[in-house]
Amino acid sequence: MSGKLSRSQARCEAFKLIFELNQHKDDVDFLFDNLLNEIPASAEAMPYIKEVVLGVMDKEDELCGIISANLADRWKIERISKVARAVLMLAIYEMKYVEDVPDKVAINEAVELAKKFDEPDSSSFVNGVLASVVRQ
Image (cartoon, rainbow, N blue to C red; front, side, top):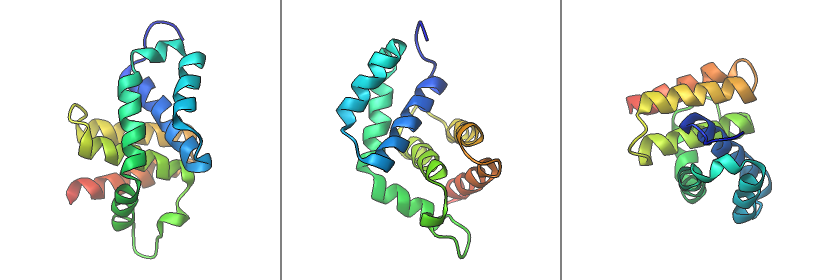
């Protein structure tokens, strides 16, 4: 990639880092440096990427609580895919804490990430959970 990342591309890279951190609890600074080495165009988007990745890490318990509160009866957060969980955490963080991201944009981008990285039914699941979050 040359040039600079769009917000959508930066969001995708942030999602990948959140997913990786949820799996391995790696050194976050190492992951940021690795991203810069692999995708030099991410440098300009790094403030946003760091904001959301570090924010999701900091607010993980709160975000998981919001997800759990918006799941259908008999569903537990442990039952949803790790991809959907990372997508939901990113979207809910943006909706609550990133002022220049409208809820509709956060939801649409989350649905697209779910379509790209998870099972076919995941996008409608993500959309449903996020719609419930907005209604509250």
